[in-house]
Length: 456
Image 1: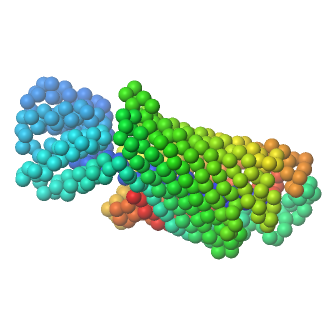
Image 2: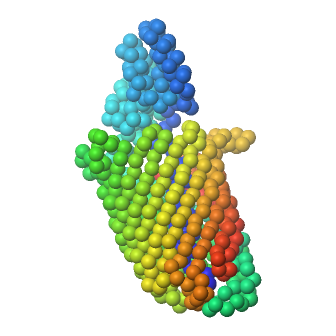
């Protein structure tokens, strides 16, 4: 009646959500706070600044104002040219030299940025307040130019579910095609659990013209329930492959990564599932604000035998997965993420075969801490998700005459509060409506999360 695979799904979904929101809330790839960085300005202001410089090109104040408007608009190359004119006129402008270095850093030209920062540090007239920023930039550049890089996050927390065992809302259920009263053991029951989730990525630069690097990821998740220990999950997954740019000149923002996949899932101390397969990631940065990643995976899944959960071994088979994630930065403080997901499972028994369609939309907004409780801004991310799943044939143990069709709607929000550099707490609430044409699988659940995250 109750499918154990849901708990594996919870584990994967939580790791995926944490990863997605971690990506959304992570420190900007621009590095430390930039000199003069402000929210984007309207294009009209850029045009006004350009006309003012044309009328009086020798006015360095107008050149500086125009450069700032270009920075606000994200036109970094033009801003560098404008700031260079100031530096040529007055080479003693060490702050301008730092600004140029920061812009080259944002463009990914780390060696050029380093030369500007080093010259700025050599200037005894560099304002004392800027020295720590410049030194931090240089440290970040050294790290980014290292051939071996580690990034990731780790989270720990607690969770409460109003319906931890996904007990059916219906009092009449189906078993072998017969309608029966719902057993007390499968009524909705609440529970607390503790969990940990992590994702670590290692990149090794191969120093080739197509910017190839070996990119490996390790994903981990574990949970322990206080009452339903038979639902305790532990999951580990490894992917590794070479990411490169197939056309570094014509399509410099396109990269692909063919990779291998392997994972292992344990359930209450028993082997539940192991997987091996391959995949292909295609990532495209369309603009400074828009990026997409398309992933295809083929997985061979082998389920273990756990008698207390039925014929789990007959779920073994091949799975095909297609994922599309698109992120768009609306403003310097808001981001939207759209996820589309398709999965097709072919198992040893037709009643385990299914096709799954899913969509999730997340809006992320950064805002100042209420009452200035913390100096760092907070981030709230409401989201809504839906999936539809249809099975290939009826399950004779439930209803031999009816194929199963499920729909699920998920609505929630997560709030992230930074507490120190690289450390944050999160609070999350979520409600799930599970709908099915078979009464056994109708359920509702409200979940509340609280936890601590370390990013690096």
